[in-house]
Image 1 (cartoon, rainbow, N blue to C red):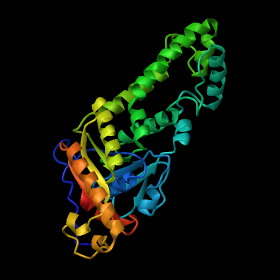
Image 2 (cartoon, rainbow, N blue to C red):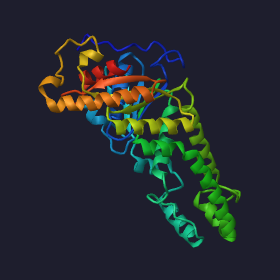
Image 3 (spheres, one colour):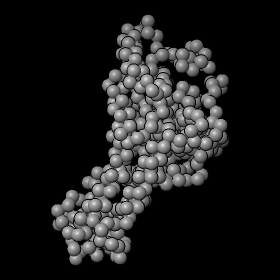
Image 4 (tube, rainbow, N blue to C red):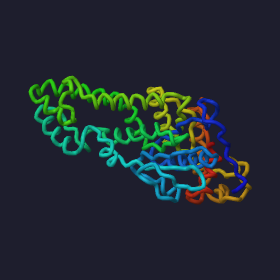
Amino acid sequence: MDDIEVEAVDSLEPGLARGTAQYVLYGGKGGVGKTTMAAATGLASAMDGTTTLVVSTDPAHSLGDVFESPIPSHPGRIREDIPLYAVEIDPDAAMQEVGLFGGEEELSGLDGMLGEAGFDPLTEGQFPGADEAAAMQLLLQYLDDERFDRIVVDTAPTGHTLRLLKLPELMETMVGRMAAFREQLGSLGAQFSGLFGDDDAEPDADPGLKEQAAQFERLRSVLQDPSQTDFRIVSVPEEMAIEEAKRLDARLAEFSIPVSSVIINRVMEPVEDIVPEVSAGEYVSPHLGDCPFCARRWDVQQSALDRAQSLFMEYDVKRVPLFAEEVRGEEMLRLVAACIE
């Protein structure tokens, strides 16, 4: 395993070569291996001496399992020998930390006033995307953190990722609703402003919401810049999964988010076929001739792989083999990194 080499990262200047982006994001449906890919990329980057932060925004965190190390809720170093940092964002805790739309007491009071005015409530669990908005606001803080040269993001499943891309429009809608709400309440407008800690605010919209809307718009502009961001779609060799990956690609295109590559995970082929540095037989591979089930699954996978090559002709399509062992710990993560980096 020590003979496996991962391509070195020579520079973080934008747009120089694959693997040099300042921000690397992995997206796709749940369960396809986004966390594994993010962890492998983060480890390879840090092993090259690049100070790297791996961020999980998926509420069902498994980053600690993959790294075999506890992951803090705020950016913390998880390896002393290499500059590797990690954080798992808790959306519920993020709601409180960033103070999105005020605290719990303020939101409770705001709910009652909104109900009287005929508006839908906005409290946690009822305002669509509020927890994701808070998590993204924390992510934006990490993107601005000068301690890190590269940030690798393990995104939540597809639906969550698409909702975060809609946050700028959602926030603008909220600004408009607040303005309409204040106008409708009339004499209660001063009381409403007090809920946000600004008794002298103009009645047209809350400045805090406008600022948050601008922050989310800036986040999206970063994601749209291929010189800064490398977005990678992860899938598995099943036709339905490939089709969903293509739908994600189409939606990302609608938001002008450039995709650099598609990674097909859990492919039933020998590791040495993908990573030449690995010796034949070093890792257990499926024996298709002795296993009718394996042979049939391989036929299914080949069909899906052909479909992926057809749908993603403009992208670099990478393959990661199906391992007999769980992908966790440094050895396995280095092996995955050799497949995708």
